[in-house]
Image (cartoon, rainbow, N blue to C red; front, side, top):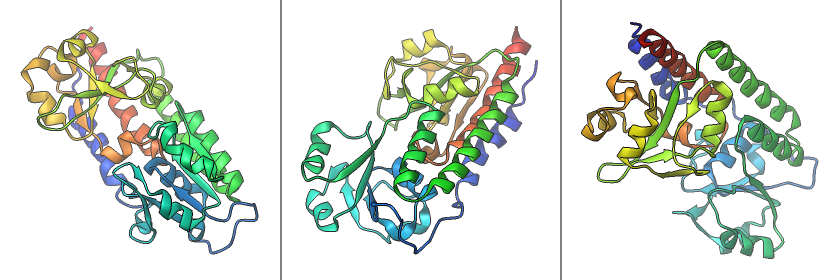
Length: 292
């Protein structure tokens, strides 16, 4: 029986280590030659993507959850606190463009900005191509077309590498779980971005029928029986939970933590996420073959 757990643990741990240092951040002081001369982001994912395709000088502000590119922390105003938008401050800042993740805000929250005439660019991506498309659209508005193209190349290279690792293998059943002590677990939905990502790199995500994370009961996890589980820091708790003792991933101790910001954001570091997850998927597939 093949049990390359040490290699898998090392691969997954690299996700956290590899993301502690920002990529080269565009600090250009040039003004974009399009009508968009200032950008404000309401969500971490769109902040990250703008960090890849846009210029720092044009960036006006972001939310209290934004922390990447880390070189920008404490250098721009906070316009969203605990998901509450500061409309008055945004009005004072007068951004040319406001970017945000459509899954994080309701239309009622966005409507006051639209009513004021602000240009809005919502991200609603359910797969890798959706992220790349958004980067291109954002780049086109901010003179970042070349940077968007380089970003796309980076993502597609990681996807092809991941697909190569899973070539000829049966996609292992996967769950992505989050939670905190004293709370119920939540799992990524089968219509979410993470489900689309898993399908693209050779995984079969199991979870609630939802386009986001939703509560999952222990009995449902037992029925879905994932062969590998990725989590945002709850791996040890999942392994020790007696309710999950019969789950294949728990029995084989294939439960691994991934840096939460990388795992949970539809953002600029999905190439790093694909690299780590594909290593886990390949090892889970090998173990399943050895047990067959």
